[in-house]
Image 1 (tube, helix red, strand yellow):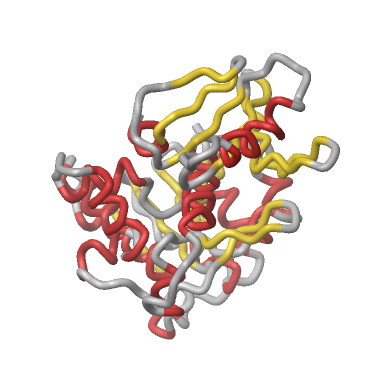
Image 2 (image 1 turned 180 degrees about the horizontal axis):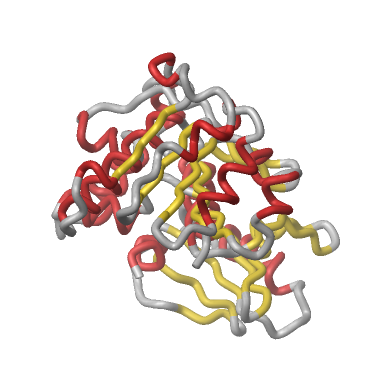
Length: 289
């Protein structure tokens, strides 16, 4: 068994997921008194100030313990470890800061925790949540204009979530609706937005992502996974009168001399096309697969 440690990029997202997970437990027959959920940032739990107080949370039955902002409890690492080794305790620790796994807690739980990094809905999940099978390009426009956090779908409006992710010297918004929340309908670069969405999707699929350079050419993403490296170039469209845009987008991938998979993702609808081994794909098909 392993403790689950969840990282969220915003507290609103964190609260929504925790509530959904606890509802799921109840639907499976867990009794309400078996679920112990404590947001230790809230003043109502002022009596839990040191780690020994956490031991009193459990009963002899199976316990599902959710500790939010647990770092506010003095010596919380000792309590988490002690609760975890009990056979009747499932322990869930949430946090929005990477430091949660640094230091003593990481040592105590070494090899015995699962770190889960939560991201907003993917385009595929967004389509599924709407229960629609209509025009994917119309749904894509909804996806990039509205927040893709689950609570935003429920509320029917975006929130102002000023959170960014970084790779190399580039920054990407954690939520594709972020730009419109901050800047409104000011004209955006469609290619940059699409690149942002592809970056998030690669993260969801478990890749370690880097920006690549081949001579004077830049490769949008080098995606490192369990089966090796893959290369991705992203362009909104490569259709023009003389083919120069397609030639430019292929150049960086063509300059890579190894035989790892190479992809050019665009919004140009059509079947998969191979350019000297480089697969050009309709990006919405790629996002939905």
